[in-house]
Image (cartoon, rainbow, N blue to C red; front, side, top):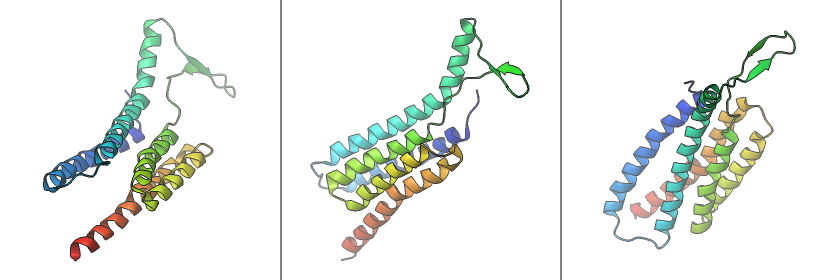
Length: 172
């Protein structure tokens, strides 16, 4: 099975998801009160993590599965190079799904931003939707850059703002 670089990259993010789960469990033991919207927002982020994992799985398994199904049914896809006339076997693959990942990044961020009325998250989600639109019209070579912009706008900048507010409150 051919693993693409995006799959390996996204597997690395699973380490950070596990770390975030561990931190959340640790922090929940310290927390004395629960806000009324916390369970709903928690559910949104759990569904987001499952969806990202599922999309990664789909992206990397569908070509292999399709090849095997076709082979078992006695079919083979061929491609012809119109310049040389060479005919070779075509291995099915999923077109770049990086745009879909970028679109998904915005979903829980926008929901959380709207629910908490936190403008940096709302603006981050809008920037991420703009990155999604741009990614639909550009070469996939720009996808990692757009992922970085989306991640920075959705999570890093709002996270740093929240961290600064938290430090100011706890310092008093």
